[in-house]
Image 1 (cartoon, one colour):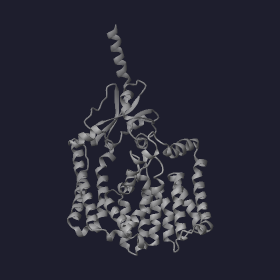
Image 2 (cartoon, helix red, strand yellow):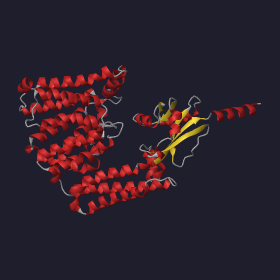
Image 3 (cartoon, one colour):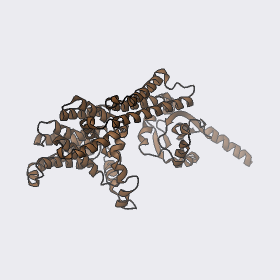
Image 4 (tube, helix red, strand yellow):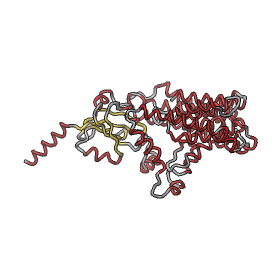
Length: 475
């Protein structure tokens, strides 16, 4: 994931440098891509978007780097393998926006003459599409459980996104959590702290639309095509726009020197605020982990130094244009330092507990299906059985449930009646109920932000003692 991310940032650097003939523009494009929150957030071990972003953007990078940005038979063939790799990383459906953007670009280069496009380029686009789908088809040949590809991936995961809900397609599109409005703001949520610059870049590009260079038009063709395609399903997420974020990063490199100075200063201010929150959060966590080494002197100095650099950038406005994006990257570094206790022994179940769960059914509550991947890293080899969080009391009462993962607060008891505690780990909560959110707004942050998970096993001896006591009482 890291290598794919760096390679994509390198593509943004080379394109911006070529399009502007300025090294600084390339550096800004690469830094902007790395600073985008969506790129950082979805560069995790699971739920990653780095590989498909690289492969899907690669054909457009090649077109812009070639002396003549047109589609020949050789490039069409190579692009088929590029896009096929992207489809394997994401979905066969992604051939529609990718091939659609290539077709739009070819049509554009033909002066929007449909007859010329059909005779000169349509067959090349078809070749690219067929090769890409053939590469995706390798999945069916190589996967030993290929029956689940059609059942769970094609029909449920892909076609299921077009299923009309009770309110109907139009109502779902206009309001709700998957409506077009949060999705349209995906450019900003993916940008994160860099969002003010992205807004300014889009405004500048709109003002420059009549004088726009041809290479920049190809970037916009890819951005618009991907955006429109993901408007169609009933389910829309901002992460679906990530394959177009390299193009947005290149645009940042092109227009960075034209955006008002207060914009990068605002980014630095947001980074300073975030760094101070991380410093305060580290203090709260260290206070709740008394007796357990949390950060040490180097960690505290690094967190304080990051805040100092961000605040100095806000104070010295002449630094803002050069330092705004590095400040965002420093915030990510600060976040990694803040997470050190969760990545260490305190954030994992003890080895003895992991071995005890290996090969056994373990019930765990989770609000998101994506947590399945996380828990598999924590308890490798266990037979994991996911339940909804609200069903945890029933699972605890069910005598057939032998082993569970039970969430709680840092101050929660380390023992549950009727169970033996095999291990405990601290967690950083990222999902809150309405009541928890209200409680946090009243100042009780640590109570809900930090928590723990207990791996427990039903205590047979305690059950037998309880049964004997009940029998004695009956007699």
